[in-house]
Length: 591
Image 1 (cartoon, rainbow, N blue to C red):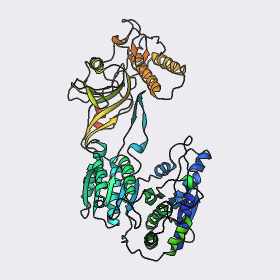
Image 2: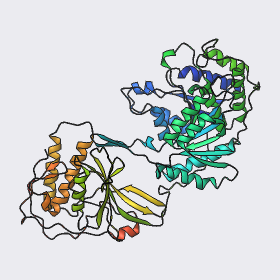
Image 3: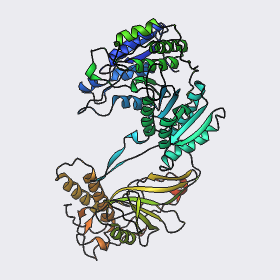
Image 4: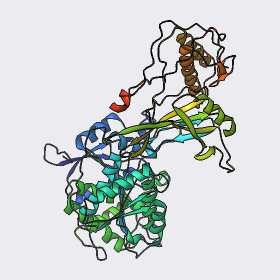
């Protein structure tokens, strides 16, 4: 069910007026809707700056969330994200909480709105993925001078947005869909959307499907925007392209938006809050009003939506504009709303209304493991290290560490450029290194390494029948408990507690890696190369003499977590438990 009804049979909706000029433009739009016959039972709720200031870090109070859960439809004005308090945007919070995975931004040239592209017949829709990609918000400092943010794109997320783009084309009688990606550079995440687009397009033979590189898409939008009808793209690309297309027809003041999910739909104005003109009645309600027409079509009120759209366009044809559009001869917000109401039932002369049908949303398989590869083969492991040493020093160290193991060092890269083995290039390196280890033979390798370096992240490199992939591996654990493990942990924790707090996470990463080295070498005995107080992952350890520690086990250290693939699980090597505890040792606190 797409919407709910009240006891009188009216369709229910949540109304969020927003911040700044939000109450003015939303109020004007509501008057027009009521005059057009859109009898919606509105539930007025709050979100945004006032909620942030009241102490709610999300900007969305529980009563607003409950109302949207019940009505399943919301119309909101512009929301402000205050600087200095609160967390992320209330807009983002609403999208994520209700899994509004698709953002639809229609763009169409309006008569009387003068732009450099006037007369080109611009009429297109950007369908943007809304919850994944770089906007997932997973980021951290790899080293004190290197930041990382993860770009996450799923097969399910790509398929949902691609299917919706084709359904938008069908619902509006459009003939083509372009998929804009950066698959030539980001071959796995953006390439996943390209491959999904090519697979899904075969199920829509009545619609032309074209793939375009996103930078070329932006170039073509400025040169010949009339060639595009529907553009399907990822979150980051869509954020940029949707604002670009809005600029082609006059700006964000003419940009409606819809955030659609399987359960809830949120319609919003893209314009800003304009706090400097609050109370002066100059704001333009066009963006909110066009967003309301999208809401009406979602509620199957197609006749009312067409009447409102025609009255708005007829008002523009008559030369009436607010200060948001034209400063000379402009009218106030309330006067503009009165002008639109007076033209209800009139058909615009230079406007061809587009026929709309109900948009079909196709829920996909609800299982979390949406992709089921028939085979998985572990081919190696990638390790990210922090070290001030150069590649000519790191390479031999790492090769010596894996000597006699099933793995060998393939290469070291710095910021994506291979620096070991040497290529003859002139690379300006930082202290963040990616080290790729591969199998020496055809046997399955447990993706766990014990390095005496400050490592930041480990990734298993997997080959599936779906193509190459990569997943973050679980952090390794000690193969068996030992009496010395607790003392090593306590020492590392005490050293961390004695330090003043730090803002970045690299100290915590160092402490974690110190504890891990303690578990690894405290249980099995430190290798000879690490004895005598040498540096181990940013900490200094002392070890007993050569005759006091048992030899290191030759079997790989088992993972904390069983492998997901049955064939890989069966091939994991299990380290035998020792019959006697290793000799105790006295650690030094980390400096």
